[in-house]
Length: 146
Image (tube, rainbow, N blue to C red; front, side):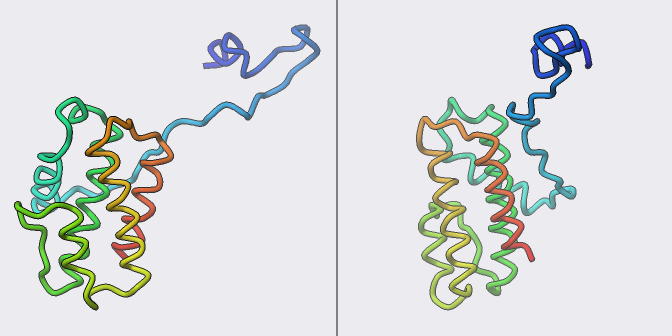
């Protein structure tokens, strides 16, 4: 590991260009969401959501991670709202509208709306989600699961 750090010049050793330094400006490892084992319902929601994804994006890990966060949030919302579930004919936007009318607090609705926008951008555009997008999706899903 030290060899790779020296080789990529994120660490320089004494005698090489003025002494020992550590470059902290390089990005750290990507987000590692800690997830409990997913229930069958969450896995089914994930499959439903992934059906809408562009074919070229199905195998991209960051896309799957955001869909996992979205599925977890939808599952939590379904339980909280007394059974308002995502139907296989619903788009994410239609489900967002279904839970709006007093079923979620204004803050919860705003959090879920941001997660839906991130999910739509991930699923329906050529954009490849960054590690920051994945981190944000899990942060939003965590706020809804509380």
